[in-house]
Length: 266
Image 1 (cartoon, helix red, strand yellow):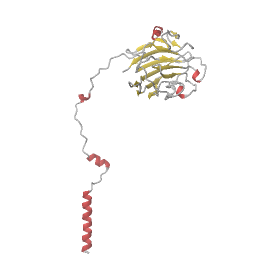
Image 2 (tube, one colour; image 1 turned 180 degrees about the horizontal axis):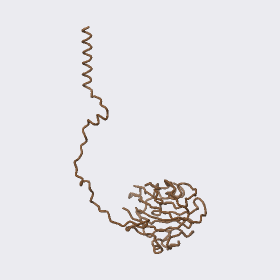
Image 3 (tube, one colour; image 1 turned 45 degrees about the vertical axis):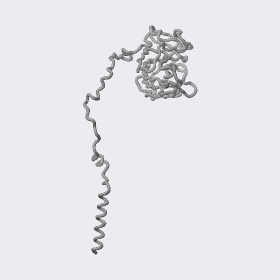
Image 4 (cartoon, one colour; image 1 turned 90 degrees about the horizontal axis):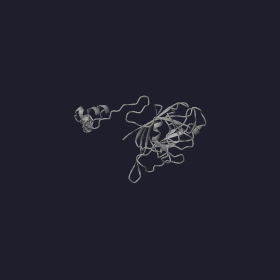
């Protein structure tokens, strides 16, 4: 009997020794609390204040009017000189009065100045008299750098392929929602565009990006373009200048534009 008790005691002692040699398991939360806190650098609040660049003071425009640092591309007939025919430097042949209206079969137009990264505001209106369907109804386009199209179309109760409706990055990105107003109503595009960047050997380093608000509603959220707009085929980048003119498309419909202004961005 004593021998049995002695063996049991030895077993208990051995178990306790083994338990002491092994790290004790703790609940994750308790173990985390007992870990030494991460070293935190003691800093003063002013050490994280940035005084390197003072933002320029501008006067915002009211109700879509251009801010004080914007370049007005079209605000009336006096600004027709800011545009030329898309195929050269000839004067535009669109109607240019208080608004700028496409004259069918006269060709598109482009700015006399070139732009890269920018914030662009465009107001546009499709004809109040509805003719045509799908892509034949109130069709035009805003081409950043003359290459990357944001589609203008009467998309109010007008079915078409979704990456070709108003607010699409044509044949690339469907708008998040259809925010179109009816025919004959003025609509707005507010665009933030980042131009692509190419390496010295012509290889793409960074694609172009679009963010677009249509009538105040976000419809394109910083999308990375696959290349310039193509009607047929898959887009592919080819190296080009850092800044190029902005184009407005003539697609056979008398679409009107007004209050076009731009802010150049770094």
